[in-house]
Length: 259
Image (cartoon, rainbow, N blue to C red; front, top):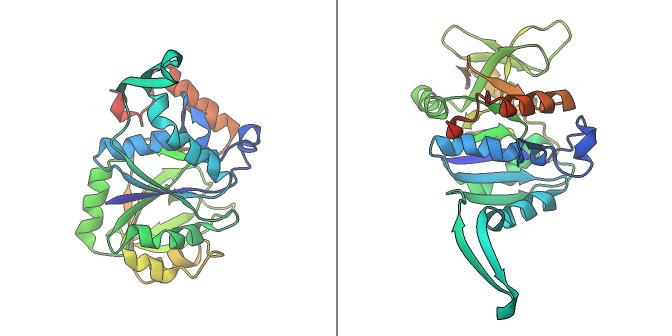
């Protein structure tokens, strides 16, 4: 199953760095948060990624182009016509497709643009700015068990994101944008989607979290996978600092591969 990661937004809320690079390329613990997200999926055996690029997409492409070299021991022998010898490498077992999905394309439009790379199989989708210790294997099994179009990971945190109304059997009966009076369970990303989802996305101007998700929920085709563990979105500089502190203290719950 392929993993699609939305990494094309402007990320203006972290202004200190996002004027130089896309938000998913902002580093925590010396690595882009995008790398941390990919490492989590890889921990569960999912190693094929489709990255939806947009804002400063060349930064993402250049980082991956140099990844093998930057993670290897290398000897440069300039006495032998610039000979380069690679002694060892710690490259990941990843296949990464980087797609320029447009500078101003909305989230739904970015997903629509990678349809040919996904094919006719179910796929996973998440955002490029949040880390969690979601059990990806259990998430996929839950999605397969109910047979509906979409599964969305839900967490119970302070109100910042889209609100979910969930029935006792796990069906999401309604999805809507937040309001100041809200409290409760929210969308944490980490979704599993059947290819039918593309039928609900019109084009570049479609915001995935509005009409597509609202329509799927109204049809009873959106299910919630409840996650009671760690989840945090890197939305501000303060969020970044908190994640950095967790790594420095050796208390980063999402870094399962480092245990």
